[in-house]
Image (cartoon, rainbow over the protein chains, first blue to last red):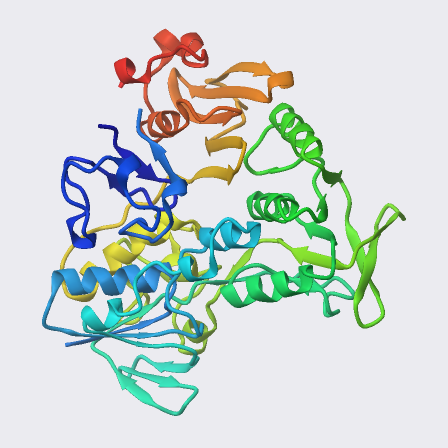
Length: 53
Length: 401
């Protein structure tokens, strides 16, 4: 599964790690994150993330 | 141990968050002048464009600070700091004692001294209150001029255009994004903007904002005029250094700090848009972020030096991809550029090499490879062998990195 980077702060969302602090278990793909999910570092929404090549 | 942070924007909030992660036992107080809890400023553009609901602007749930045992006081200015007594004084008359103080006071939108700038209908876009005021005005005023063709000005213009208002961008330079683009790339960008219905006027100085009480138009140095009923000034940022200056701290363009974000008085630190490190003020999120983390460590005696940030500018607007990073002009001995342009398709890729190493790039019209090219520049990667392939759409970044 692809990793995604926050264009605002550089945080990388790694599906293997998830975002357990915010209720996202490991193994969750970026596409499956809820639309209300925001960058856990700086708080921008999903659409300011870009896929890492 | 009591850590006090002046400023509730990104640097102040990230510093508080980092401090709490590092030390569960200390007192952390954030004093914010804005009435609203922390929100990332890029969200304001999304909000103005109508793509993000107001309640989704904020980064953390309402209970976040309380759960983190971070005391946040909002809507009150700090009027004075007294480094000799380890005290901060608020406008409400409170005195707050600190062991370590972080000045994360941010920046304010610059307001150039144009006659008429005080008229009703002239806005800046820096805070949520600014955005609310602008949106209220745009409800009944649909002819907008944006003064400034830099990143923020262009993002604002696109956001307002998506609300179907009439928008003109006025830029003093002879091209858009004068700091991030060369002439050829800027011409392609201008055509893209015009295609989306945004007017672009280059090489124009605004002599006066016309009107009675309210804005009626602009008068230019060239003698021409433009009828508008709203003006948004996007003329850059000024670091907020007043408190530091009055307290006798060393201030240049920003509050001077060393690699540990220490200001010139023991126990006082600065980070974010207000800080000046190694001769630079940044005004970009990644720099504020790294500085805040470094400052939080230093405030409790840990060592996480800050070594500067490579500015990468990404214009984030729907249907248009633009990244500009590092040196974009190949001027001088040892420099070389590789360009691939397809103006009709809005595509422009430029590499700037110095002695075979990648030191800058413009990447426009495609998302593919944009992030990777930024990485390559940050690493000053030696791309001499495959520089021509690098600008081709089929180039496989996975293999090269």
